[in-house]
Length: 199
Image 1 (tube, rainbow, N blue to C red):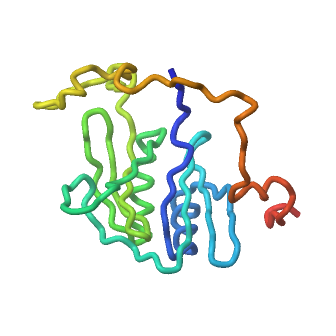
Image 2: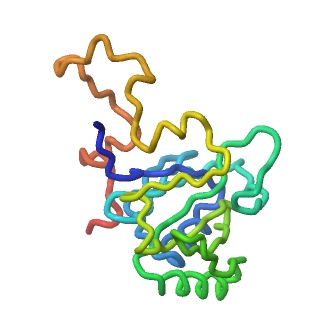
């Protein structure tokens, strides 16, 4: 079975990287760990945790999205509802709530969802964000729960992967054929560009 370490990064878009850096790094205290760019292109990464990052492309013609209530159904083409960040201590929810409110951002009251406690807000780009603290006695990773009153048929098969649902690999790639092609950012670690944070 494939073992995942978490979400390496989520990539969002902004036209205002200044406001984005100020919000994610300075207000939410997520370290800015990579900044890539050239004229007409920027891609910045912020550290959520040791295994997880969130990144932003700066595109000059992007418009902030219209704010939509988290989890509220919509019509028409749609792909993303909100992103939730887990905090280590319950007190962190109140710290974030107070900081967001003091900075002039709308922020919800703390909500008890049973297995998590959450507060909701929006970043300067209109991206809906949630901050959650897990309730220790309800560890859904160890004890999955299905309480949907009318569960989808596929969900009734259980929480574990059903490996017989997709075709088997008929020919695995071999080591000598696993080529890597140059991509954006590769030059950061080959000394081809100046690291402004190194003296």
